[in-house]
Image (cartoon, rainbow, N blue to C red; front, side, top):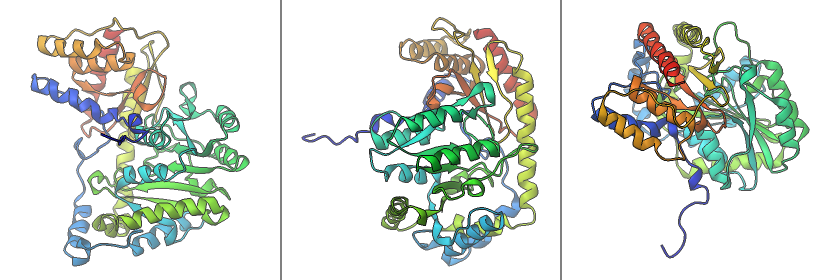
Length: 432
């Protein structure tokens, strides 16, 4: 082209969670049977959407208004309901105008980072969900600025290190936290959340909290929403229905903005986010309109509680099966439906393999790992996929130097899940 057309941050956009499906498709074409543990779609994994949710959606879909544009900011009645719900739970007081709907949180994440001044950075956890780290890096055109989650302390944020990195990097304008966390399944105690809020207050920052899994905290774990601990600090909480209901295909998420009036720059920034939605006209109408009826349905809480209970059982099964392998570090999870495994230092090498009986599949995997740039954990993931038919995601793809992998706790068949975890254990032991 006569002038450059590629965005300066285009090279930072990568999503290994779905990229690995390209390899899966090639293996399936060669006859492989694959157990997909790479992506957090409960419905695709076999969870049934309850009839009462389908009935609500069906009933609203018969109304003409479900097919029309809604206000750019989102359906007013739903925003009023969500604001009141937040206020009833004891959080920072918000109003309907403090809520903006998006076509899923992926859309929200892209806009929240993309509308920042390029020199302003959001410090993100490491490891972290790829959409956050990639979108933040893409907006700036350089790799992400990070703070560590400590695998030796339940994957909790290292707040001492966070404070140092904020102090010595004046470009940092905000702090991202994901609670419950993806990819680790950690749930952060209130004390840690308040430490992060204090850091933000001390250095005049705002906070972004991805809370898409906030209602999937396991029994016995204690945490708070950002709204409950943020005090006077400006902030944005990201929420949605894709994981809780579950309805990932709805592409329906929203942000709640806290303390906008306390800082003119933050107020102008959040107004720019709203303006960008005005340009797009609106987000999808039908999912927004059903939210109040689903959340207030008498079966809703019991339905979510059963899912939390099952994920907790799956977590305990996985932890009990894998914890005695000396080459890995694994923590119990307390929320969401993921678990991360970390290989101990100097365990992985570029010479390790797993036996693959199918010659064509073995040849394909060898061609993929022959590139010297393939990370050690990605090499393991490829061999695990070929030898055991288990598809996980390399931990290094979550913007971390730790080597390991993430898998889901989603399989509704607990016996099938145990078989998968057993295959995983056998794969690790044979590979090492």
